[in-house]
Amino acid sequence: MTCLSCEIEILQAKNVEFKSHGSLFVRYYLSTGNSKRIQLNSREISAKANLFWNESFSLECSGTEDSINNLKQQTVVFELRWRSTNAILGRIGGSQLLGRAEVPWKTVVESPKLEMERWVTMIPKKGSVPDDVKPPAVQIAMRVRVPAMAEMEVKKKRNGRLKRWDECGCCKDSGCRCEDYDIFVLVAALEAL
Image (cartoon, rainbow, N blue to C red; front, side, top):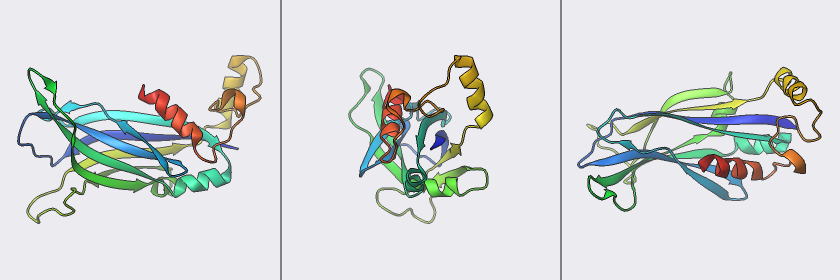
């Protein structure tokens, strides 16, 4: 079994133009296997403020080499979204898609330090941007961490007992089986609360 921590950070946005009052947020989708995905939203920030989120999300999982290889085939879909707001009524209705981008986990897993940080260009739903306009972009960071054996030994000593389940602790009593990313769903759902 291999234990992994997959981290996603939403840092900031640029080249975003607005016609009225509202708020911005980033919606992202994580594949959970079996053609399913979960949806997460960053916090909403005022479109008039600096466009900084500096927000992170972390998933911990353990799995076989096959499940790790399956992760490399998945992508994270990022959407930059805008929601109209009114001083009296607050949020009004649904959100509007400003642009969308996909980042494969493979680029992270195959990078030298298992991490990447970059600006992703948000492709508008119309599919193209005029030559004289810069498309919106969101700066993101993605990391995959493999906990050090030394850290796990310290945790075992701190807890005063040996654990029967995988040392990273992602699947407590049931044993670790992440072939279809069930743990990703569980941890993401709890993190979203």
